[in-house]
Image (tube, rainbow, N blue to C red):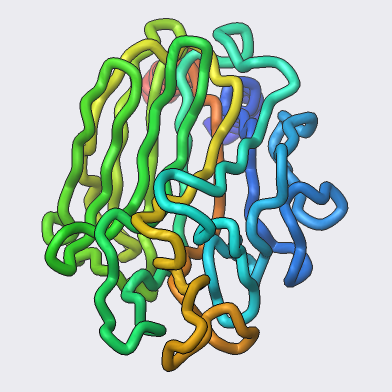
Length: 294
């Protein structure tokens, strides 16, 4: 039996490796101050190494991507105007289609965020401040994000092709999500390019936390790019117009509002055929074991 498993295990591993493939894998474990559009500083270790950012996106700090005003790095573009701004796009050299993968999973892991507007003496954080991330294709897009909500609240949301805006408030999570989270949270989209169907979910940063379902959509049959964007209710609401305030968030050593992304991953999910292969091999091993006992 041991000999049989030694033969089968490599075959199973090869089968899974052939189907499970990281297309985009940013861990941001590079030199502090590195910019993601500089390939010598922040590398995508996924197979789509020819994917490129159109502009610089924040700065790397202690293994995380800064989006906003941490004490060390200032991504001022998040604060210049109101609306969905500071768009930064990771563009694939060729759109991903069913020839590249069928089922996929896109996960964004946030290490930490602070959107309380503590640099303002009035300490009143605007509503709808945060970040959104999109998978963009020829048939539309699938978008999710974390933002502040009315009345001091916080939420995860999703929207996109074939889907209306859907939100889950912070109190619905296993550990409530707030405007300040030392352990961050996770967003995930799972989809199928052959059908165009996708679904979004979110969870808090606690280990073992349960996923909260966001929305479902249609029409995403290709993926041409990944877009990050700030959601900014008013110019300066992240701290960029804090001149004269108690704390100037634009000065090094002082923090404004920010989110820190720990990792960005787009992975092709193993096809059901690989699981069928594994089941068949295990069944064969079981029959061999039974016969030897007889």
